[in-house]
Length: 202
Image (cartoon, rainbow, N blue to C red; front, side, top):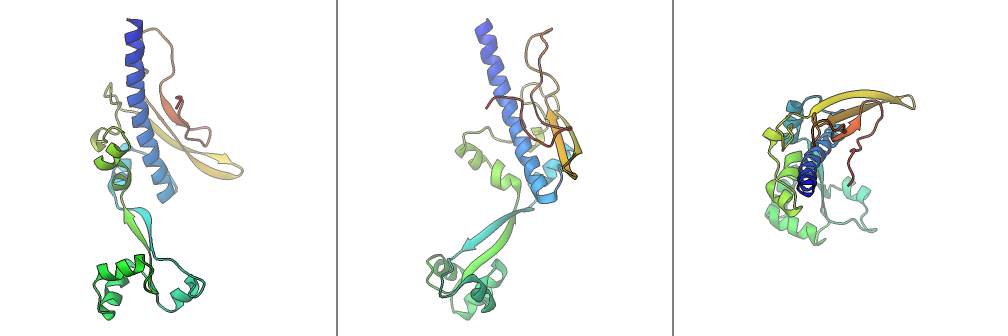
């Protein structure tokens, strides 16, 4: 019975830890975009779905004969919005011009910032399957996958070297185990230190 209990505990904890890691990675992206953590799970889920995560789109290489600064001055650096007009001037389709750019067979280069969602970049089912991770349901992101209890999430700030740093603490309200055995719940982050470490072994 003890072996079965330990196996169940290990499996439950692994599932809970993965959910906490998913919350942490979404919060870290929120921090990168907005400079703060989402204070509620509702606002975190809205962020995860919103096309606000910048993705650099670069195609074509610069060379010594036509460096980036000169290319920009001469109008050879395109964005997605200017691509169509230039392709038309050249008598090409957008796809044909992109092919030439990718092969470095034209002086034109593509440099742009596109915006996508955290979900599209990290939680899409194909991405999760490729990483051999469980699929993410945004409706259940805030809950322990085993008990269904809502994770506790708090945000704050601490002063580090005269600079205020945002802090976050997310924890499972109930540890998995037996009655009357004192143990810590799984969690990441801290409200008194500027770190986002988990209290589990990787």
